Image 1 (cartoon, rainbow, N blue to C red):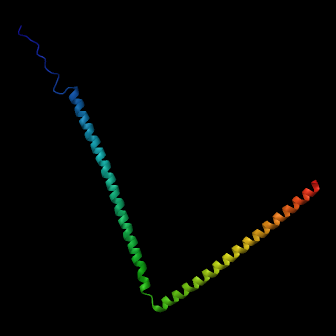
Image 2 (image 1 turned 120 degrees about the vertical axis):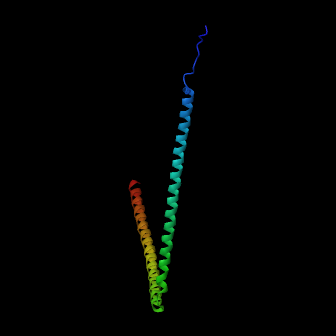
Image 3 (image 1 turned 45 degrees about the vertical axis):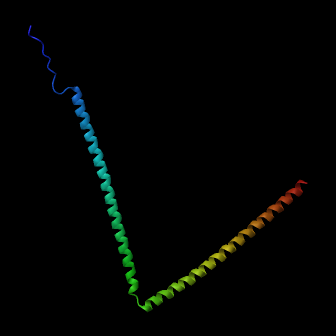
Length: 133
């Protein structure tokens, strides 16, 4: 009776080990996905910052270009420009005065019309009251 049944395990990999390996692989895949998303966001932000730097450089170049032509003007040209600017200021003052005068006259006219309408309405009310009495 030396024939005893020897139980050999079903294999080195049982269900628990396979499940553990799958969980570890799943965690590795999730880690890689999260890492790629973070890298993409960082890359996008880097590109945005470079774009902003380029915009600032362009604005600085534009401002630098604007200052050069005025240094090349002669004193006669600058005098002419100032004379025209003074004339523009006088015209703006005259236009403002005319606009203000027009606004006040329109307001006065509106008030006169409103007063006449109210007088007419009061007259009509008085006539109606006399007819009723």
